[in-house]
Amino acid sequence: MINQASSSLISLTVAPTKVLRGFQALELSKEAIASLGKRPFVVGGDRTLATLAAKLPKILGRQKSSYAQASYSPDCSEASLASLREAAASHQADLIIGIGGGKALDTAKLLAHQCQLPIVTVPTSAATCAAWTALSNIYSEQGAFLYDVALDRCPDLLILDYSLLQAAPPRLLVAGIGDALAKWYEASVSSSSSTTTLIIGAVQQARVLRDILFQKSADALKEPGSDVWQEVVDATVLLAGVIGGLGGAQCRTVAAHAVHNGLTHLMAAHEALHGEKVAYGILVQLRLEEMLQGNQLAASARQQLLQFYSEIGLPQTLDALGLGSITLAELRQAAEVACNPSSDIHRLPFNVVPEQLMAAMISTTTPVEKSRNQLELTMAISEEQQ
Image (cartoon, rainbow, N blue to C red; front, side, top):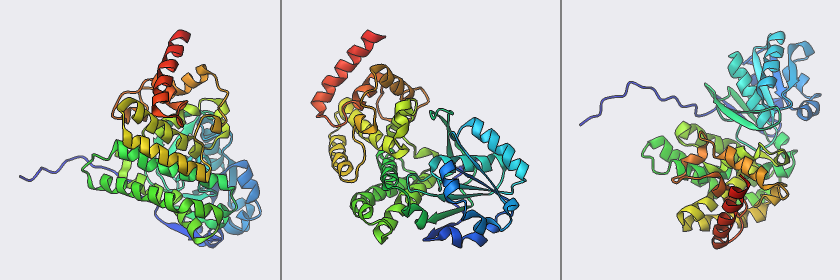
């Protein structure tokens, strides 16, 4: 029997309209940018805008009045967006260009969405896939994650300039590797049982992405600018974005990003990069699967990741994130944020309470038997302090 067609529509924002990539790609994209608008408004961080001050006039117009720029600082926050909307309107902008890291690009994308203008993204590091996606994360002015916003489309143009990314500190690419790895460990939990064609494709691409990163990351970090380095950059910025686009809202983040979101509410965590916190969150997620499900595959995966993290320099513990001296109350604060009712941590196939998450967060490198003892101790101490 043939099923009746559904009257509902499913919207997918799969990819940018155009991607231009290569060395000196920004300089070579002048005509592509001009085709989208004549009065661009550039959004970036203070350091990025200062670094590109001499380059932008040659790309965006000989007359300074033809474009305007503004910093998104202090964060991708509601207050910053309100100020940027006023500045873009004052300039009579017909195009938004985001240049910088993930927060700069998230701000620019959401600004373009709110102003109903075209958007160009130019990442200056390979630390996230924000240049690709139709999603922006909103933070408080103090840098605490608040919520995300789904956008109506991916960027109109993504310019992946290897020259800019090669100049970035290697730590940013390492963080991007950590963030991209989470695609597999989260999607395989949230969506691996799906029978939907595109979600199956997204989950399998996440597995391929993981394998590429395992095989090529160490060599890429030794040779910035090399072919293998470009392949890893493409994996973290582009392929990671493809997975989110194909999988859509049904191929979601789970515990790794929930842990990241919780940690952003601790001031001491703000020196750690997004991808570093997410990479640590993968270990926490796998630890939860070990402790609460007795999942031996998760135990094996965690050991594999610990070895890989050691090889490329990703954090394995709270101490490695600069959080070795946080109090139990601060740890509970992060765990409670990560376990709030709307958190993606509840996409795990079992229930998690803050005490269990706390135990997992402080035992990412210990044997599972010891972590179970730590769980009992943490819960007991936490109950005494409430």
